[in-house]
Length: 99
Image (cartoon, rainbow, N blue to C red; front, side):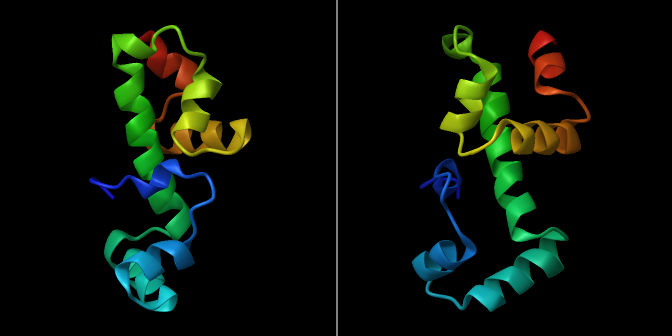
């Protein structure tokens, strides 16, 4: 996840990640659920949120709209992005950017 950043692909799936790791998708899902206490979508979205936060804290991205950054980080919809961001940080994306 850290090196290849597959979470930036908005079409990434449990099956694709499992295939790249040469493991059974059900086994990967079990590991994520049992050890990280979250489902696959929340796991991927947490990685995406961390990438969004890095970009929001980087001056090079100041000129970009929030939704542009979200889409670049793998989100496919504004509502999913806003819900995931609020769940992960307790703040809306706009509130976070103003900090």
